[in-house]
Image (cartoon, one colour):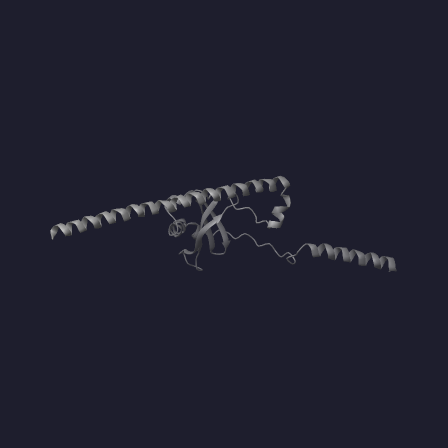
Length: 193
């Protein structure tokens, strides 16, 4: 092998190393896990799964849609539609299992999980990325809102000052009524003597 060939090979190896360094790897891909079959005994235990879910929610929150998902051998998840407002696409789940050669289903876990078309919060974006697209117009609008905020502070201060004066007036009225009642009490004592 000539020097030129060894330089080309070294350059290619360096460029491949740089490319692979930019993308994180998770190791060599392994065998894909086969989908487990749904256990017949656990599939028939829909009433057990529903009873488990009813411990954390009401009957009205469980819809009519029902799915089964085989997790592992003797481990099955029942999925029921969630009808709560704001939870479109979410499912109540109850994971059931059974011991070998047993015909009795046991509840492992219950909860609420999002489906494929569920409404989810958008991904978090760092503030530095969000602020990249701020224009001068946006900054001017912020200045306008700061002026409005100052005006609102002044209005609130004026209102709180008015409210602070109201109790004083009420206190003055109560002091006057107290003095009048004391005067009438003194007059009654003098007339009784």
